[in-house]
Image (cartoon, rainbow, N blue to C red; front, top):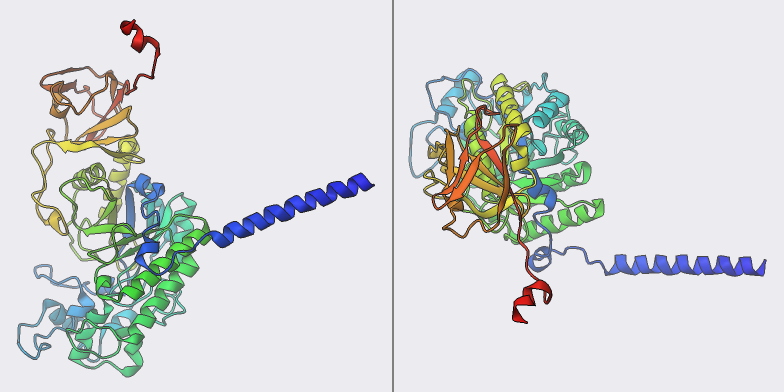
Length: 521
């Protein structure tokens, strides 16, 4: 019995020591604090994000119905909630023509003093929204993370918010964030939400300038302020944070993406968010990601985003492009990019150390337009064959070769029409032994990769074999002073870009002694 008691005491002591050790470890683990030095220690680009390469979000809400019935021959600006009040007389210093948004709104709804943006919210009808259909399509497209635009400039919450009465449950009877989180995560994708409500301060300044906003609705339109004010008041900061914090706490997103204008808010508000969210990620035991525009955060604390753009050269820091195949929100008779264009953009992004976040603009009722279903399905079919050259890859020594280059890098450069040819090649790698050469258009009889010439010191390992992803045909090739010359297979597996997998012997170095020293004896 005495031996048994001693054994029990020893076990108890060991358990206590282990618990104490854990407690000390937990105590010593410093949470992120609200300063850049602390926040710079975060792993802002975790492996899951670098491996994912492709994500989807959806611009959808009450404003999606605003352009129904619009004149297809006229130009309408995208920020309808802002431009619908622009009668040309808002600026006291100058008079201009009324915006087409204003003229359309008056014709469709009536005078904005009576039928303001609040009225558009009251008409929200998400009767065709189906989270399973959305998530199935996103998974089929090959996306690895996805989610809604949680709050756009219009201050409307696309979730069952307790922080604001202007939400999709009160006006629409749905919680798309909860429904999408469930379905997206069930399909193995990460869940994200995007926030654009920093700009709300200026977005609804036109409503106050136009007039007709009731004080009881300031919680939507913000408190009255000058048209060009860039200094939000305390109420705005409090409401901005309450909505963001609620979304973090309730939906635990893997990624939060910010639109612009947050850089104009106080440094304290930005560091407060980052510290809170990154600490929540630690609490949830997952690596969360923050994406930003302009100068909102330092590069070592979050992921920089380029709107409808990208760098024209590789970047050391990981980055992101957000883009849309057409307008951000629903537009009748909208024009869309082709699958070929989007696939080429994705390839160029990945080769330069970035990810693509692609917008889907649903119909006003929440259904996905057939043109988007077709586009995403074709992207998914291409990725099903060529995804090995995209997912989980890292940049190669050089990002590519060929005549077609972006003349400049940065935001909005997609307005420059780029058409890649079969002489344009982009490179990725899985390891030092496996690299991919992606030909950006249908290859002809031969593809010559000049960068892999025996006269250039880019490829310094022996090639063991070359395959085309999706093809069982044996690939013929030779390497000489002109480059790596690859004979194309007779049958190509896809309609767009084509990826060659190049397996190398790899690199090794001699150790001290052994055969390397034999000639010295």
